[in-house]
Length: 284
Image 1 (cartoon, rainbow, N blue to C red):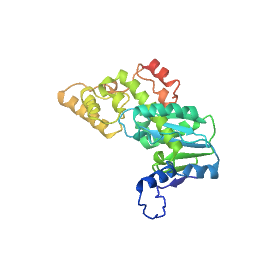
Image 2: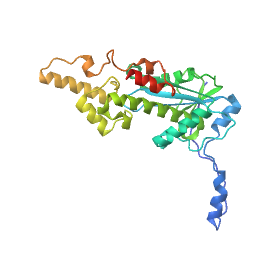
Image 3: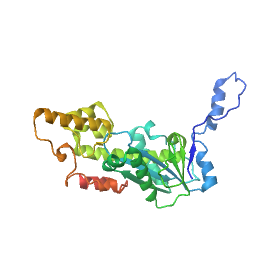
Image 4: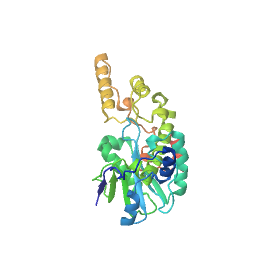
């Protein structure tokens, strides 16, 4: 059974005006709660082992989509500084990722490759990455909570929370781990493909990235099913026809050959913080 939690506005009781606002701020400050009660309520209903799941990399035009599933202990305080990964700097995410790994009951990563994104679409690839992350957890969760809307093709009972990475601690932790992992992957790929500045844009559409596409064409790690990539391929074909040149081979426009990065590292979700860097060094 899937459940969906919409964002709501906490109810409050009007208070009489305080002539001295400074003491009021000091008094009210400690009572502010950073996280909603969604996770606490789910643990009461479903059990203490709650897995938060989030993915990163839906929007870029290059690179895989990466997901993380993490089970945080129910009886400890939230890690100070944890937030939606998009609101944090790179340095903050890396620092928090270390703390999350140390405290987590279990966590696992999953991914879907560019080939899979092009074949089944980015939505289904995101579901695939999340499923792989959940399947790789060494501890079986009592329930799963994900960011966004209910994923009807995710064959695992879950509760979907709109803006969950800003409302649920475990989802925010998953968001940070997934983001740090994907950024590391794109930084390693940037060593081989420096023309696209992936170590700065992580595969997202930036002016520098588009300039690299215009000058150098696409790579095996670009999503050809995305509109901008499709337009570029069409432009290359039209330019070839106008110039009277022989059509380019598939490899020339970015299809991988035997020496290219091994997709199975990503397609098989063989991603982990301890071995990711070694795997990428070996393959690149």
